[in-house]
Image 1 (cartoon, rainbow, N blue to C red):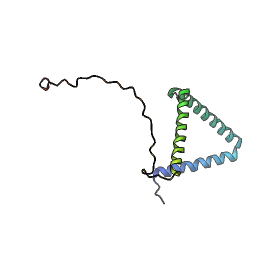
Image 2: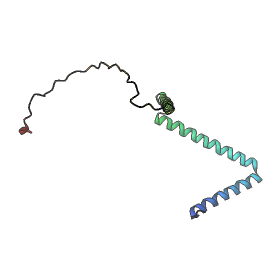
Image 3: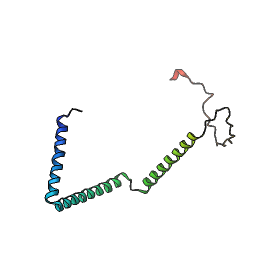
Image 4: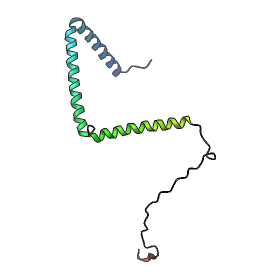
Length: 126
């Protein structure tokens, strides 16, 4: 059994006292306890709603761009899971038996930039 330090004893004591208090309140005034719990839940809900609204506007999570990004991220994760699951089920093929796929090379528009290749550097001037 783990050793109980002073902080744990204090926490357990508070929990026991809270349970005893709620039990006695339930026995003496059950409707008052229910009303108190509902009011507390409503206040916490309002505070949570305000908190979410305020921070979602600040961070931009409510924007359409953020929603689109989150949707794309989910789709990407699903695609990666499907791809990895498909690879796991396929038997591995040795590189010698694989057929090389003929890929057509893309015609990239490359330009030559003329530089000072032929000009010798005068190292004494540095």
